[in-house]
Amino acid sequence: MNFRQVVKNLSYSFGANIVSLGVSVLMVMFVPKLLLVEDYGKWQLFLFYVSYLGFLHFGWEDGIYLRYAGKSYDELSPHIFSGQFLGIVILQLSLMGVSFLFAHFFIVDSIKKIVFLCAISLAVFVNFNTGCNFIMQITNRIKDYARITLSEQILFFVFVFTFLFIGNNQFGYMYIAKLGSLCIVSVLCFYTCRKLWTFNVGSPQDILHEAGLNIEVGIKLMFANIASMLLIGIVRYGISIGWDVSTFGKVSLTLGVSNFLMIFINSVSVVFFPILKRMDEERLPEVYVQIRSILAYILFGMLLLYYPLKEILSWWLPKYADSLIYMSVLFPVCLFESKVGLLINTYLKSLRKESLMLKINLISLGVAAIITFFSIEILHNLNAAVFSIVLLYAFRCELAEHYIANILDLQLKKDILIELLMVAGFICSSVILDSWLSTLVYAGAYGVYLLVNKNKILEIRRTVHR
Image (tube, rainbow, N blue to C red; front, top):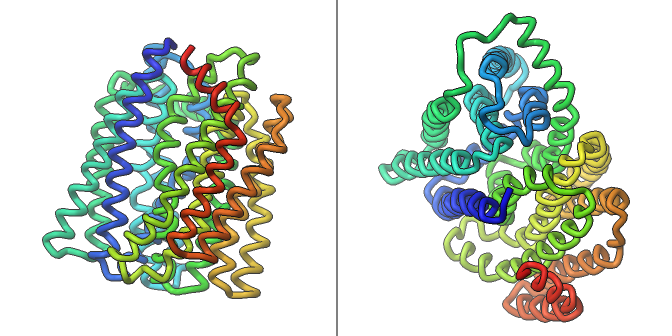
């Protein structure tokens, strides 16, 4: 892939994700302001459940992503892919039926039951769309991928704010907005991948054989992703059962603000993966160090936005002002998650180290379970539960980087220590001072950090301009 094509793909992906960021900002600014606190809590619980729907294909789509990565769109067989998507849709419908029975017999809380049923009803749309998006990513159809991402965000935005501004500010209307946008995007996905659809799907044995190959490859990646999401999911679930829906919504709002930056990171990783698949292995260590350094300089700089953003949100959303102090703890989460999501996991996938990804995430999940039990069941302390989130992400990030450093034969211990000290300094200054002075203190530390790394910055700049 030439440089011009890379830039074009990045611009498509960035463009779509900038719109996603805009929608996310507006959702955070207006939805909690216009919804009742309890309804916003329901909405956040609904989004929490929806985030796990992508695992109901049991690695089927992950296997397609890994096995067919790097192929052109014209190389894909309509006979094979029509059969695979038919099988995935049938699986989702079957699991929806089982989940409805589960909710009827085992979920006692009526509010949580309704929210769960609303979430599970979206499974077939979510996973069909994800499968089509995977196809567009691995075949380098980034423009089509960006168009679909953009369409979903705009449709959802229009539906939500139409309902809110005519006074329909209940959870049910938010659900209808999500359902409507997903249905329309499913039609768009079907049309965009229309060359892959045929009635000649083969026998059930053919479909199951291909599915088995995909699941065999993808199941490890899926479990790694599940363990990764459960890292924060287990803490959020603990908060959902340890406190009321309103408290869950307030903490989720803070997490949402803290994770804005991940939208940009995801847009880069979509383009970055196929590039790594085609790159000479000898260049991988050099590229890793350069991208890691660029990420660190940018993300540490972004932490300067914390206090101004906190003040704006406290003024705009006074009902949530008491929970926004948690932003000081959760803002660094995006730094650790960015390194893992964009850099480490992308490298591990390109090197086909799914088993190592799974090992790292399972170890981290075990630590998360212990810490969550202690902070919620033993201490029943919301502050401890929230603070544990950044500790868990830091632990997972540094554990993963230890393994990738060994694979690529890199010396990163000094850099890791300095970065952890920067994060600790940011959290301490923000919590203890909780004023504009905290921004000045951290700005000073950031300035020193840039001076210490001046030579690296100049070297990266020369490399970019070659």
